[in-house]
Image 1 (cartoon, rainbow, N blue to C red):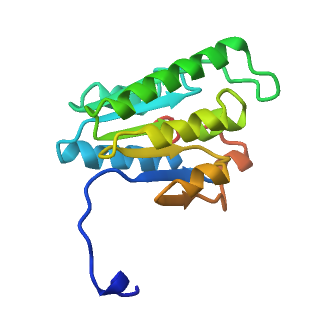
Image 2 (image 1 turned 90 degrees about the vertical axis):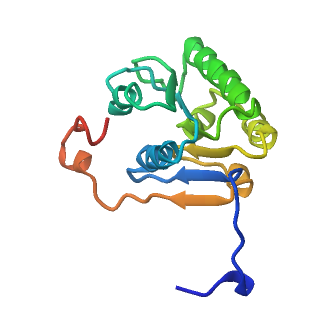
Image 3 (image 1 turned 30 degrees about the vertical axis):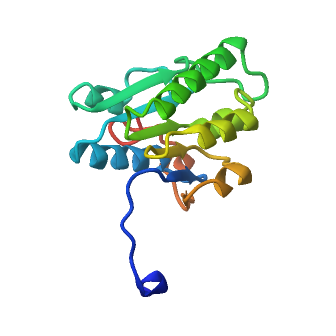
Length: 184
């Protein structure tokens, strides 16, 4: 697979921006894998989950057992109505953005994951200007991961990594609900 760019490799520290998007499964899972890897190297990781407010997600249970990994949810148990989001959904997303801004700029966290932020943006719970500002304001040594379908081109343009998960097949299409431990 190709040679080294320009013939030389450069070492890098933290500070890149990742976007995991697309209609396929695996965006949050990939971000959590990166979180686990980072914690294994002693980094402090915080996951800010937008539009999620249900403590039965497996990652919530696991995070309680893993030092250096914090997960904060800013959502309700109920699904957000995409066509008519409730004020409470916008308020929770705004609180999530405020919390995300604090942890992205405080210099105390090595990796910050903004889970489902792309969806919150697409569903108009937050604005594009707010998201772009958040990316631009992050501390230079903080690795930032943004997940969710519907990533905006402007968000992807600011990213160093962009990965699109594409659905080819999914059990949901055959009438299966999500499986505990695999999908939630």
